[in-house]
Length: 252
Ligand SMILES: [Zn+2]
Image (cartoon, rainbow, N blue to C red; front, side, top):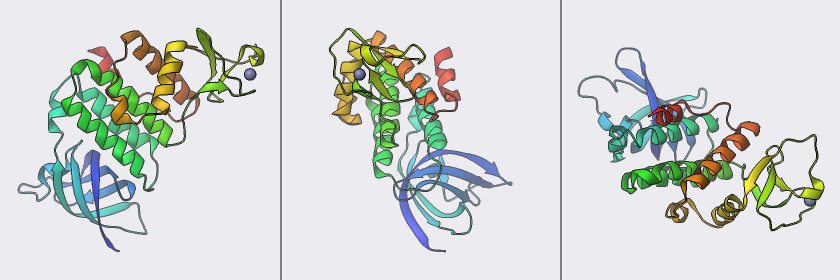
C-alpha cells in the first residue's frame, strides 16, 4: 500500500459513520479518486477546509490496490474556492463542473489536460464578471468533452470532406460532424448550426480555455452553443442527463 502525494480538486463528499467522510477528488496524478478521510468531521479535524468542495488541495494518501476507496493521510489547502459557494450567480456553474467531472470520468486515469482545465475554470470564476460565467461554463464543457475524445467537427462534411461557405449548416450529432447539402439524408436527424457558431467552433478549436475565456460572445450565440453541446453530448452518451446543479441555476 504505497503512500502517494498529489494535487487535487475536491468534487464533493458525504458523511461516513459518525465523524468520517468519503470524498471524491479529481487529482493531477491519478485522475478521479475516492478517499476515506477518517475523523474529517470530528472537532479539531486536521483536514479542515482542505476537503471542502471546490478546494484545491495537496493530498497524501495510501493507494490501495485491492479497493477503489483509498485512505487519506494528510490534506493541505492550496487554494480555497469557498467564495464561489457564496455567490448565487456562480455556484450552480461551479457545482455543475464538479458534477460533470464526477459523472464523465469513471476510473483512475491520469489526465493532466483535464486537471488543468478544471483548475483554470475554477480560477477564472474567481475573477470574472457574473455575465461571463455561463459562457465560461460552456467553454469548460466544450474543452472537457474534447479532452475526453468528444470534439464536434464543425469544419467539413463528414461524408465527403467538403468545406462549404453558407449561412447555416447541418450537423449530425451521432457522427459528430457537418453534412453538406448533397450528402444530407431525409432519414437522419440534424441540428441546424449557424455560421456564427461554426466560426466560434473554429476559434475554439485553435485556442485553449484560458485564451478563449476572454472572448465576448453575444447571448444568442451562447444559447446556440449551449443547446448544441447539450444535444451533441446527450446523443453521444457522454451525458446521461444534464447536471442537476445547472437546473438550479436556470431557475433563478
Ligand atoms: Zn458531403
